[in-house]
Amino acid sequence: MKRIIFLTFLAGLVSCGNEVQPKPNAYLALEYPAAEYVFYSNDGCPYGFEKNSIAVVQPSRVGKECWLNLEYPHLKGTIFITYQSVENNLDSLLTDAQKLPLRHTIKADAIEGSVYSNNYHNTYGMFYQVLGDAASQAQFYLTDSTSHFLTGSVYFEAQPNFDSILPAAAYLKKDIRHLMETVKWQPNISD
Image (cartoon, rainbow, N blue to C red):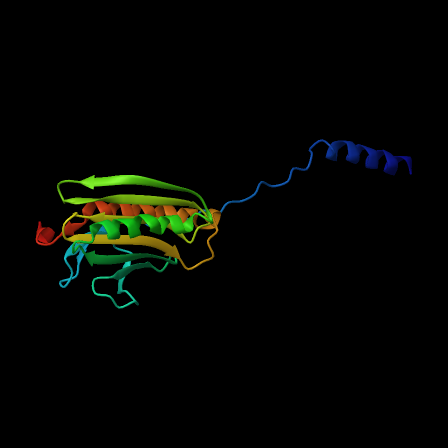
């Protein structure tokens, strides 16, 4: 009996040496394919740009000419692109485009805007990054200031939870920036 008590006591001393530690929280490791860009243009539209090859081009469901959606099925996200011609209405187009990100201020933690200018392609505009649980995580507009006005925004097919969509949003923001850098207006589309 003494032997059993002694062995139990000895086992207790040996096993108590390491404290039990809880496992740290795990984070979802999302990996997206490296972007491969291809030039896209629609014969009836006065603009073209480079898009990620995994994006599927769909005509806009709104049905306006030269409006399109770049759908990313694996990310469950879409970049909605709209085009309007400038016809003595540049001021109102700019005002509308600059108000659009402000609609997300209720849910957004911050909205950061950065000016974009490309004299070579004659494109000028703004890129807006929306931080927080807003419906759209990024928006932009581009114009040549005389004839063309292009806008775009990212939306996901999920309830906006910034922490959950952050990797996908960051991936699409890179694609938007690349799209902005490669926009060409007609007649320069074939350059």
